[in-house]
Length: 141
Image 1: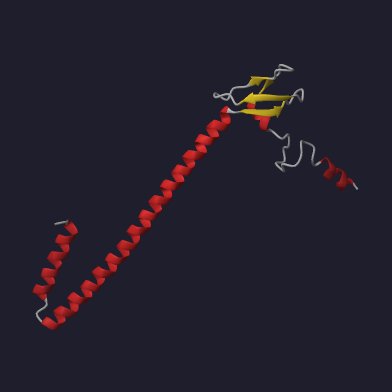
Image 2: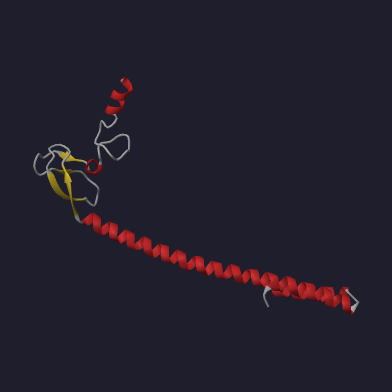
């Protein structure tokens, strides 16, 4: 018998030995039975929720695994980008070790981050540097 069942059984025996009036004992035992049923129902609901969360968690891990596989595969594919030095469109693969590579035309060393840099320090994503020069002109007017 589990520890919980033993405790409940011992307490029920203690209540039966303490309460001498059969009607009062029946009422108390009915209340205890209602409490146990309420706890059992809540535990069942929690158990179902936990199972649902475990299923969703497994789905998320599967999805993340698929995304990871796709990202790794994409990293192995060739990209086309503009050399930040000479402007030549070059085909390159992201080196597995993330190291720098050389432009085949101008032979300058290109840092990987440079291929993804839009040249904008303001993070507006709409310019290639100097996007706010016009703002200064407007302030002067």
